[in-house]
Image 1 (spheres, one colour):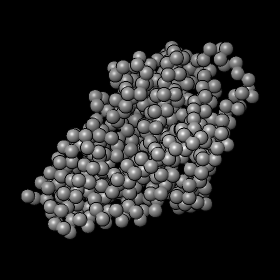
Image 2 (image 1 turned 135 degrees about the horizontal axis):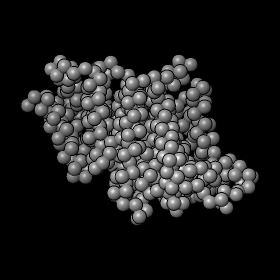
Image 3 (image 1 turned 120 degrees about the vertical axis):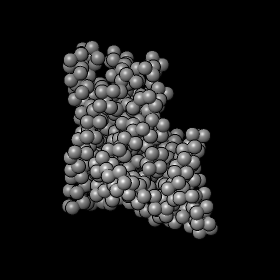
Image 4 (image 1 turned 135 degrees about the vertical axis):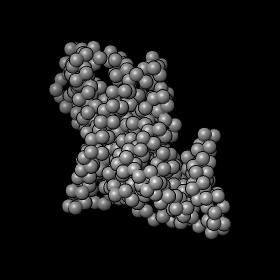
Length: 440
């Protein structure tokens, strides 16, 4: 059997295992282990060992449990709930103000946790019922929560970008900084869309009743201080890092400690909160470490097969495609795969092929990491089988049906496609901040 057929067989076997419901890391790891031993005999057993050593010696990986723990402490202690109360009071007098506040909430939740599912959970359980109760259009607000949660894997500290950094062998700090401006650009586009549409159709996002807007200034300021606490925690870890005073790992430790102290000071650090946060942090961290380990093993087998060079030759020499056409085809393949896979599964399946190919075509791998995150989130929300659509259906109140969810997402998907095109056309939008910080 040719090496090309072996590579195709590996992909087919992996997809078949995933269809049966196997965990991502188990499917990828099993296929790579069987392929390695079949191809190279007992020498193939060195591949997973070598991958494990790479994983254990990657110092920036320590940021992963730190940031996940910080996010869960803020979530479990209900400090994140204070954010929505703040936006409720300060943005309520504006048409669509609560929806705009929800987008801002999603940005801050993303900065606390780094997982899109965390933003979805908080938006669906805290913001969505309140928006519906206030008379907001259910289609629009369903799209708001889904679009806002999509920022979770782009705004730092993105857990998925940690995984990409390990596979692509790129500095995770630069990837996080590269995601800041594109994430804020998308959030700004979402807010502009909500503000303009609610200005044209005020019934979609009514203002708060006059009696609820009559809140004393002292109470408003108290809520502002309380709601800005998570932002202060984020600043306490990112400002020293951006200024070069601390390393990325040290900043992650500062963030975790700051969240712990904040929960303690507000008298919300109970045994239950700490126990739940530790258990969830351990579960998520171990899951990502297993995925990284499996992906490294899978990538090593592909390097040994020479599959990357074969695909590069197919696109550039045999088909004669330009680098930009190849890049666009890659992004389209992510959108197709996103209808039935999550972002981590997509990354570990295609990264062994795409990342070396992107590098060979002369594109920046930091910039491509940002393109990957935006594209996968577009795929998440693309009907008919987008991952986020069904996740939203599971979390949304009963009055929101699947038809409402499908109908809500089109404007936000178009905005994200426009943002993706913008970042592709102007790479410096993603690259200037990491270049500025690291050159500094």
